[in-house]
Image (cartoon, rainbow, N blue to C red; front, side):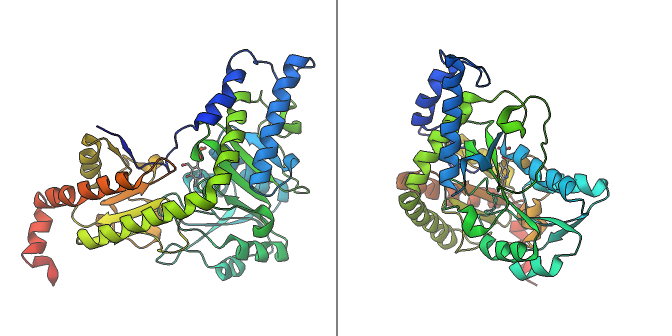
Length: 392
Ligand code: PLP
């Protein structure tokens, strides 16, 4: 049975070119880049080449890229670091951020900071004017994600950046779901910090980076050695960083064609689900949406059961985000969109990537209607609904 992998938002398959580029640094080229001999210089050079490739992909300078151990670490550093550096007590974020951002903000709240959580409209967008309205004289940071991991909405970061730059407030964006999938330009967006993560763009897991604009005085978060120009201590994950550099170079080049191809597969999925499955509600927008993201909530369906049925057909999908699957609480993102709790429990996210073919999409489209029908047939609430009890 062919695997139908529809969970690229959770993680992506390592690109073969990235693996090939990594192999020497996992074997004979094992030098520590901090060493002073040729063997070490080879590793150092490879790290710097990867840094330049990441910088180029987001229109930054190489010295503005600091490697971290994950996107989560980059988010934590940007938020807690800005809070500490600025000596100001207010932070603005949104209700739909990833937990790496939300939990960092909640941590700061416990330590005397005030956080404003901006709402989103029913499609999942933050209004730039709402950011401006929320700014206070003591605002240290605005942190708004570029693209949402659950329902794909791409936020108007350039409009937000215009406001924060004019008002002299730092702006961080969690671009973990965006980098490698849509064009990302730190100059055009006027962001001061940006988080990314290699395993979301066909690089290895455990490698992230934080872009810190030159002149932004962010203090180190992890203390120890002098690595990363004294900004992030810890011996570099050389092979992982090399893999990240190769993966970003390959995927950035593919964005123009892949985004068009995936947008068409995405729209086919959306149109077909809407046509063939009654009581299916699209979460997130139709436009300004990540090319590979589809999220639906099905009334009278428990997503755990649907995911199980899909799994039996070798189809990998998710109920929302990978981090919250298994949790009985409805996702905070769907709650922010105003999705009722019962409906949120019937949410399915299908996230596509460079390996997804039209045949895969057709296969999942053939599986879904009978599965949803099968689960509804067992639902007493659906029975009541059909009998009209819930019509009034
Ligand atoms: N931010 C967003 C939007 C994400 O989707 C993820 C991962 O799911 C992260 C941050 C965390 O990245 P990492 O898995 O590298 O810690």
